[in-house]
Length: 289
Image (cartoon, rainbow, N blue to C red; front, side):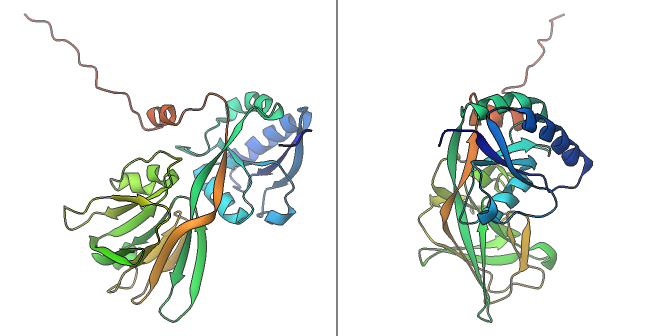
């Protein structure tokens, strides 16, 4: 990085009082901090990526706010530091009470930028239209409002792998492996792996299990008998109907998600803290009478 003040761009689009109050507190601290320059702020609308001249972005909110931000950055990904005003906060890992201390690290450029896999998703519709999306967590085909089991065919690099029958299928990145995929029984992947995990949701066949494959493969999903209500969902935020004859193609994106990590961060410590990995329960020894 170049010398001089660290230029930060702040995103605080959530209009809840909690986020806006945190932004007001943060603004007062930022404007007084030497070594940091406020390059801009987006409170009501997304900033156009080419208008942002900054070293990094600070996102106030939860992981959902970070998912939205990195999708909006598109081909010009900025390193993101997340301040957790949501619930779990795997990506937004800095607590509001820790923020003033973390500014000391930012001003001294005492942080690292970790790159993570993103995916590009193409929705080829039966009528010839193609919708393209950039994502960080996962692309899913969900039975959703169809209220019925759905057959979903999976092919990898053009080779037919299997047909899942159930409530849906999730194709997740390592970052997304602790999100919807985890709740569906998928494995937790180290965040720096270049791999996707394919997780069936409530499969009708018990031998269907999550599949981990290399990120350089091309994944194709079809729902040949999709009823009305079947949906393609990107990062839990973009939802489009899936019809018979549609193809969902997922591949590694040409850009990487960039996450700012401060000194002392440990991924496994975060898992232990946020997922309640307390180890074996402590049993009380019963006294013999």
